[in-house]
Image (cartoon, rainbow, N blue to C red):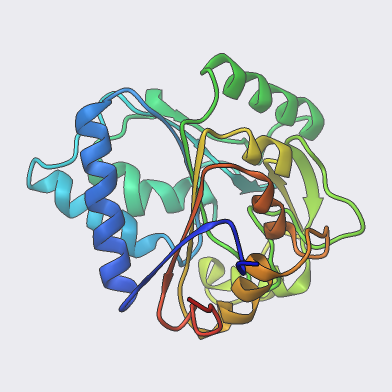
Length: 249
């Protein structure tokens, strides 16, 4: 029996991975300019976003017709807060490739009502006819978006309390001060994520290796939210050598 039915590609290093995926995304956009993209934040996709910025600067990646939805946002932060994920995306991708505010869909961390905001977001995704390609990273504890390991997982977009390990991993957005990282966030649920037509998960670095191994070979469990990707028929897992340390060919 194979270790996993997910498609796995291992690249020499993070830079090679990012360049390969950026070239592929640019080619896909040339063939189908109007796409709905689900996007992730965090350290992992930064190099990919910068490679896309370079391609755009050379006229090789056209984002003029895309529509975007991001996975998550900190609860309590307005979009223009320097620590918000919206600000992160403006800096690392949107401003680099000419994506306008009209093309962007984002959860509002400063909404009056978290539940109503989550329902609005799910309706917006449905109105856009769903997500064509969802980009994902994976946390060292196996979280996807802000879907943390738990006894149960929410299917739809929801409000979540962040684990301390997740807050620590986001401290760089707040000057390295963990106490400034919000304790709650809004996140697409695992059901929302799994409705995307295609999914690409990126994992880089040795700290992700054991988590990737469990994703590919372990059981489907709420203790490892990423394991639910095994239920999807069109997932590609892209790894650098370090993250793929325990992946058997």
